Amino acid sequence: METKEYLLIYNFKSGKGKIRKDITKIKAFFELNNRRLGLFESKEKKDILKLINSHYSKYTNWIVAGGDGTVSSVVNVVMQINGNRPVISVLPYGSANDIAYILGMKKKLSFNLKTILQEKPILMDLNKVNDKKYFVYTIAAGIFTDISYTTNRKNLNRFGRLAYYFEGLKKIQDDESVLLNFKVLKREFSEKYNLFLGLASNRVGGFTLYRKKNSKLNDSLIDIHLFEKKNKFSIFRIFLFLLRMGKKVKSDNIIQTKYIDIKAKKDIKWNADGEYLCSGNVFIEVIPKCLNVIASQKSKKLYF
Figure 1 (spheres, rainbow, N blue to C red):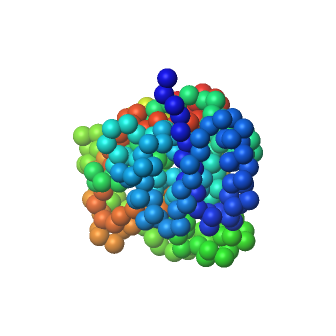
Figure 2 (figure 1 turned 135 degrees about the horizontal axis):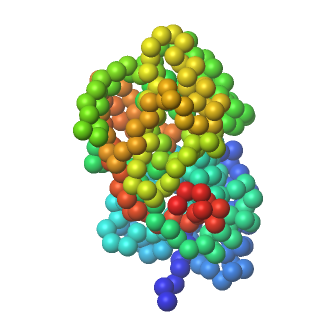
Figure 3 (figure 1 turned 30 degrees about the vertical axis):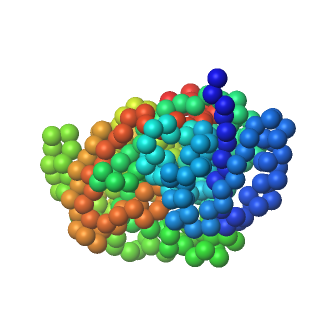
């Protein structure tokens, strides 16, 4: 029987630094359950690269205590590991915790830790861009997509997720539309869009799209939502989409696909999992069931 060894990856600066208060509780929980827990502190994003080809690879389960950006960084490291890859679980300690939410991790630490020890791993899809980088649940270009890294850090620590919404309100009158050319599903077309939004689940920007159907994390598909720029009022279609909680209407432009080829100007920036990813052309493809994760029973029923 394989011996499970757990590695806690954390950053004291994530979110409001709450992990600093909880780390003693986490260590005590694993000691009580006779499980080995190693610790890895990441002070900067580049620190996570140290996890590759090091003694940390002996740990069979990596617990990421952080937000979406930290989780995405760790996932990209995991996908560089040759051979057996660790199982990934998430503790929500960031400013944005959509990935943790999708996997069924709650605010209650005791519930999350029990879930990590008790639930069996399940395979989920990842999404690859330009044959280089991976993202977990969302990719976007156009208006609002840079909010996660342009929002003032002090405001973020003070107001939490609300700081993102305040920043978004400032951009409503800005023209950040993008001209994109697509090759997908044997079609080729070009249009100007206020927002390109690729979703692998029903969660984005802290919103749960409860009425968005058939969002699975292991169906080998990604949903592309296109919000065309027809006039100055077109931007409100984005808000209506959120108010409808993702419910599809006839006027929606949605493509469900395994891959999509997009030509864009060099200055068009792409955001994935809340972080800047790249600029210009992108080729997005779904990599089926390539990452083992821990998810709650409820999450498994909803998304797998």
